[in-house]
Length: 155
Image (tube, rainbow, N blue to C red):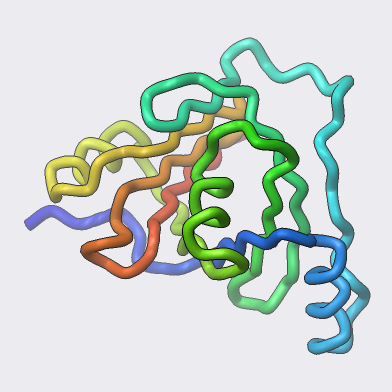
């Protein structure tokens, strides 16, 4: 059986309803400065190649996010900015504040998508940022969590 190009978790994604409060609480709990909450920039121009595709449709998905460094992994706190369909809004509506995904760096984005789909894990979200790209798979029922595969392009 073929396997993914990585088995090292790099990030745990947590979806929340009030990111400012949750970020503050993580800072207090781990006695670190509260993680900075980043908001969508309405003036930011995405690269021409950028897109966000959820369940086969392109959307302009906006998120608030904050990173909590808990080396060797980090927590990514995410809050949907609005009601645009997304994997994070879907998760939040079904499960409330909770862990949403585990993330792995991979090499060979299309090959890894093909491998996951051959293993019975359909692609549900794909994002291209120009310098990195992400894919989420429908693994919740079979693995108990969503998997995110992330590929960084060399600069």
